[in-house]
Amino acid sequence: MPVRIFEFPIDKEHAKKHNELVGDRRRLQVSSLILTIILGVAAYFAYVKGASVFWVSVLCVLAAVSGVVMVWIPTAIGSIDKTFKKSPLVPAIVADTRESGMTLLALVDLSKKPDESTKWALVARDVHDIPGLRKVIGQKVPCVAVTGSEKLGGGHDYWDLATPMPIAWGTTDRTVIAEARRTIPTIEWDTLGKLRTRLKEVREQRNDVLLLEEKDLMV
Image (cartoon, rainbow, N blue to C red; front, side, top):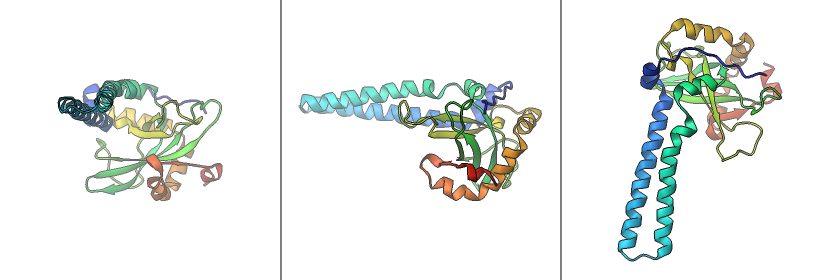
């Protein structure tokens, strides 16, 4: 199935304020910064206290790696507007709600070569807020799927990491969001709606990604 890209003007200020992937990226960077500082201080005190060259070197290398990761994170994740523009449009629904937010369940093709084959999966993500959305079970939420690999290079012909990113995190224009919803085929919305009962299975999987078989799609 060809990659379905949905192009729309990104409201960058709105995205910075509401897009929770931005917050995820910041938290990762802060964590890497803290780890780098801790390892750097540990290496300094190990050197001052006369620890072996081996252990001082190990701590220095780990601090350097942590620092590189901190710088690499924005490049790896990419800018939010570019992520919207290169990621495929997918259906997601509100599968569960709670006082502090909701859980989205998305139907995503994880294939690295979608023009040649498909690898369907259910993907879950907890979110705090989606502007303009009624927090109702089954509510349709057009998203883009941000995919990646857990291991460098990956060992499969499909992505093993994915998270839905709502179109409403990138724009306040309700007509754009409605158009995105209409662009997704009805059969995908219907299939996802019928698979909502499998949310618990998805949450039990590593990375909240449940691979589907052909029979799962024939609902």
